[in-house]
Length: 76
Image (cartoon, rainbow, N blue to C red; front, side, top):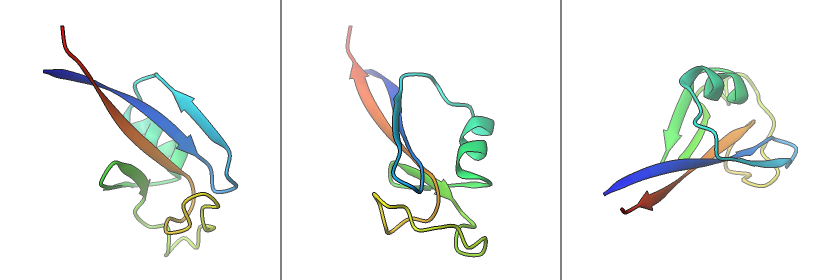
């Protein structure tokens, strides 16, 4: 069984963008504004509190921009 990932990028102000593009580590770091941390399937900035990033309007338990990583199984 193989899978592919699709991503939902959510900015701290609540803007949502879905993408089918594979994101590189560098692209993820750029979007969240620093080192990434995985919390289950959510990618966030691991230093969000120290950097005093704003509360994410859609996911208030996170600070700053986040990326949701969704896995879709592709059975052939």
